[in-house]
Image 1 (cartoon, helix red, strand yellow):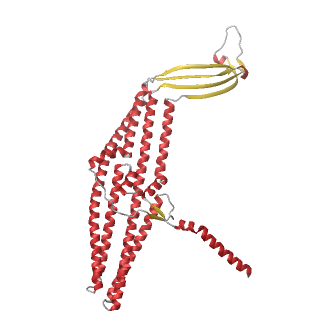
Image 2: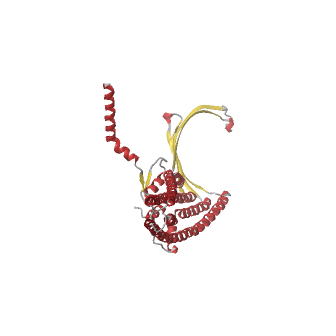
Length: 451
């Protein structure tokens, strides 16, 4: 019995020590992670597979550039060592001396050679053109990576906005449930006092049940939006997230679209990528024309050669070389391919320029319309709130039943939904403008007022 009591006391002391030492840590783990918009974008850019793939493509382009640099400017060195033991059939090589009998096969004899070979291009315009083309391709790859990052930032900002809107709907639904509970209490009190009917109580109960149903749906939608957000941030679906920035309206000073187009083209990574691709094609065309130009190079070797390892002597060679291309029909086919690619890129550049202009104008139109909708929705929400207050006062004074209160609650719910949709549309229009202007991540944070 004594041992049992001692064991119980030991377990109790252990639990107390564990709670004191590790309780704060467990509480910290249990708390949701407060996620800002800036943090969400940064996490997505580190974890998104599209960004990771684009980054490897840039590395691949850099490798291609290094290969072109080696072919155009850098020397090539290689070493060779061999030893052989052989004999020769003189008759097979047509070696004979009239009047002097020679054996058909001579040898065996040995030969040793230790040699270093070097080659350096002095003038190779085709390889230089290929090098310039590969450098432009690296720039295009960087721009493609940046465009991918911009797209991911836009998507994540949209998911964050969806979660903000869902949270705003939860808060609005909670306020309506609170109002419905107050209405039900008032109806019961008045019924007990004999100034309200049982229908008033029943009507208030129905309204409360409806509002609780809407609240449950809004809470589920909010959880679903946080689940999708966590997935796109590379976080575990079990992560508990808490949005640090609620949905709010923040006006944005607008500029004429004509003033925004040129700066946008200078920042749009997809447009700059096409420009770099065009420059790469022009460099490839230059390299294609240079295939008929002479190629000047120097090559040589130096090493030790002898019949035996102990008897080797230094020998070497250095020579200049000029190569001419006399006939190369493949160059014409390559030139035709490059011309077609260049035309295609030119068409894409012209189309994208129009598309950027359209994106800017469309975002500005949506921004202006959404700002007006926010103003109207805010007025409607204020009026609906006043209508509800007046209906509650009339019911409390006994001048009417609670039909007016229930109707006013429904009008307020509609007004709150309109306001949330209007603010969400305004924020989304700002994000669309940020994407249209280029440098999406920076513009999104600037337009949203994030630190």
